[in-house]
Image (cartoon, rainbow, N blue to C red; front, side, top):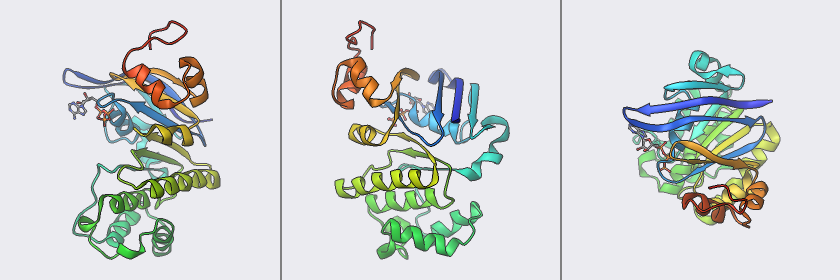
Length: 248
Ligand SMILES: Nc1ncnc2c1ncn2[C@@H]1O[C@H](COP(=O)(O)OP(=O)(O)OP(=O)(O)O)[C@@H](O)[C@H]1O
C-alpha cells in the first residue's frame, strides 16, 4: 500500500516552475529520501504534501485521501519538522509543545511531553524560552513537536541540520526505531548523503523541478557504477553520463 501517491504534480510561482509534472509513490512503512541541489523543488514538494501550498496542477493522495479536497481528514495523522520553521520565541519549550499538542488534540498531553523530553533530551532547557536555545537544541524541540501526535507519516526537511555528529547519529536511530515500532512512513529531504544511505529504502532525485532518477541506494550505486550516494549525486548535479549511456 502507498502512503503517498503523486501524479503530474506541478507548482508555478509566476513564471518560475518550482515543481514540474512529478509523479512518485511512497510505500507505507518505508523511508524515502528527496534529494536535489538548492532550488530543485524539494521544499515546495513537501509543502504541497502537507497541504501548505496548493498545486498548480496534478494530484496528491496522502494516506488514502485527496490532499487538495480532503486534507483536514489526514492532517491529524501527519507531521513535519524543519529547522527553517521557527517556534514562537517567547514561549518556553514546554509552552510551545503544549500549544501544538492542543492543536493536534493529543490525549494525555503532559505525559506525552514528558516522554518526548526524556527521549529527545530536552529536560535541561524545557522551561527556557524557545528563542534562547542553540540551533541544535531548537532542532530537537522541532522534532519533539513533530512527534507529539505520533504521526503515521512524518515529513522531515533536513532532520539533522545543526546537530553534532553524535546527536545526529543517535537521532537517525531514533527515527528508524520509531518507524519499526509504529509502522510510520518517513519522507525526508536531506543534503546529508550518509544519512540517506543509512536510513532510506528509496531515493527520489530532483533537479530543476523534475524527478531525474529514482531507486534504492543499491540500485543507484549500480546504475552509476558508484559506491556512495555523494558520487551519484555529483554525477547527476554535473550532468555526467551514466555508464549505460543515458544522460544523468
Ligand atoms: N514563494 C515563492 N515564490 C517564488 N519562487 C519560489 C517560491 N518558493 C520557491 N520558489 C522557487 O522555486 C524553486 C524551488 O524552490 P524550493 O525551495 O522548493 O527548492 P529546494 O529544493 O527546497 O532548495 P534548497 O535545497 O535550497 O532548500 C526555486 O527556484 C525557488 O526560488
